[in-house]
Length: 418
Image (cartoon, rainbow, N blue to C red; front, side):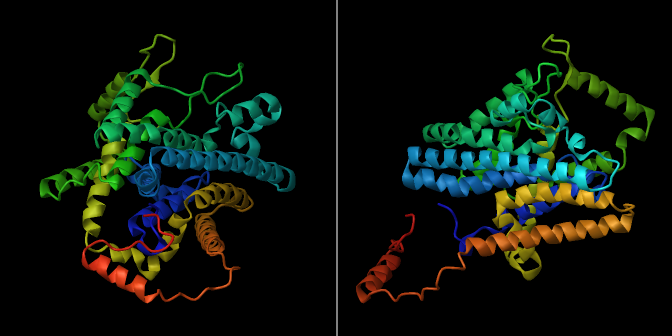
């Protein structure tokens, strides 16, 4: 059952909203501010946070439907949501393409913005590219996260069917699929042109499903958060510290020994196991969501959850409201974060792109995203409908509700999902 606005978990909206803001900053090319996003200080980044929180929120929304309305209606709702995301992905593609064409035509810049996103193929071979776009076999890198999300959503009915056998059977299936993908690498094609080299989806859904369903299973109660242990917290802090040193300060450049070790690890993870003439990298990669990235994200999540335990109200204070609002309007805010990243890249190219100019543009871009989130929230509140005063229930209904509450069987409110 979807949470009402009054009973939403603020952690879901806050961290999902924070992920959208980081995604906006990260997708502005050559952005100085992007040097200070979490990805520059560890193995994982905002993508892991977005996928995990999406899974957690999906468990709240769709898992409740499976429980109250049954398997087939729950599956119908999942497929409807996948269809919405599919349409959103097409709209995002065409909107950004038109923006980049307009930027090339009307603004002065040394950059060909269509080519920068590798969209020139779409213009050169539109018929084949259209077929690929609608069948998701043509997936330019900038538009790769929503196709991954669609495929993962389509896996939810399988997860729920297995979970009817045992609460952990669905998650066990996710682990098996993740491990099988590491051995066989189930790659989906992202290029439809026969004249181009094979290119797989950047976000492999058969790997990223594990993080999505980790959040999903936790929100459903199938997985429990480990109890707080000082030794476990210390291990998490140690992994985070190594991530900072590795990502921010060039761990491998400290000595020849470490540099040689890195070379050996690269040789180990990048091998031609299929015999098709192509080397593939298996570990420490984003596309296949390597184990190190998962552990790094879970280490951060473990510490954050326990740090906020009993203090969740801090995420509902005034300073957090703009971020919460971004998280509540998840899909449209994500789309606008991608669009704004291209708009502000073009606008920044019209300046000298000094550090202070880039900081100012980032602040305005984030402010725009927050304003859009508030506008979407206002529109979803149906402000054009006349306000109806709350009705006082009849005495009989009051007595039933009081009696039910006394015995722990509260009567559902009219129109509730129970």
